[in-house]
Length: 174
Image (cartoon, one colour):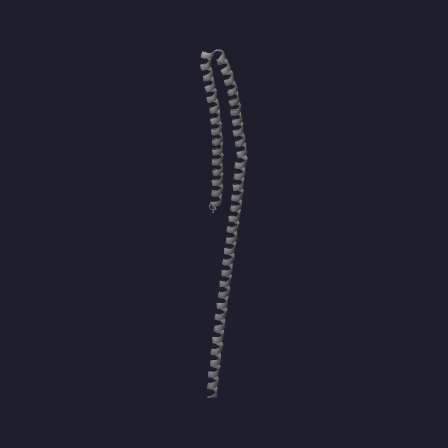
């Protein structure tokens, strides 16, 4: 009987040790799986952080390029404006010289007309009218040339700005 109770005790002891061993192996596998999961989560976080940093750097670079292009476009427009304004002033100065010359010639024509009153007065009036038309035409051309140059410069500015905006908004090539 004592022997039977020792066998039962040994059997219970062996079952307890076997259960403990099984639990230890199971715990080891669970810990191993948990470590692998933690590593996968950490790698995923790192990859997402690197992707976000790369996207931020690309955005910052595009914004920097856009700002530089916008500044260059504005400066080019301003520099061209000086040349356009100088051309308009030059054309208006030519028109003013023509106007003064026309007035002087008109006075000369009037003096000539007074010398030959009837015949020359009509010729003088026609010459004066022709000179006035020439002056007005040159003034109109100068104004239109200035407007056209300004419009062309504005179109170039807008086109440059559109190109800069498109470069900013362009999707990255994968």
